[in-house]
Length: 258
Image (cartoon, rainbow, N blue to C red; front, side, top):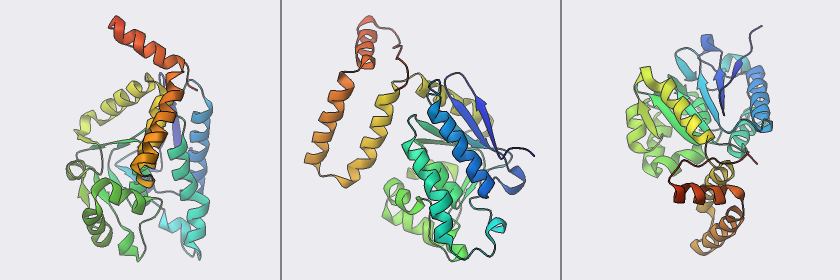
């Protein structure tokens, strides 16, 4: 039986491919287990300094496979056991993450992409917040990410109306970072992942956390946290290398991943 998630190590990063193309890469429990295991392996591999997540076939991810949960009584328990741990894994991964949305992203599939640090999408891709059509709320972190990325007015429209959002519009409104030509998506996403893999991993991950936590702090509290983190990073070897590279006008060669 084919694995539902393909693991493809590259130089400095891992490419993870959701591979249930016949179901638009919708998730069942085996797929959740496979992706969780792949992310754990990436986190444990010191040679992996970034993760690129994409989908096989014509879709990125259609969210939850509804056929796999038909008759499920407690959808909250399903979230607690599957999607919520997945989102936490992605947000707590000790390396930067990139999503390459190659086609339709629907429901929790949108949430999966938004849980990554950077999102690129093919111009033909669509983002579809399908929850209201099933009489459900946006979950898997979607209702948390949406207002932070696109603002409350657009977030309400996307969530309540459930209309598909084209990739170029998703870029314009700030839902994603970039929409690119379909033919170049894979190459551009891999180039971004490779660039992140060459960066100062600890500083990049600390930056991700600092930006997220800024929403829950006062300015004074945030200034103090910036100073604390900068003090830690300033004592690390990557900072010394970054300064030397800047003064010597050469690319920095950052050390091993923490």
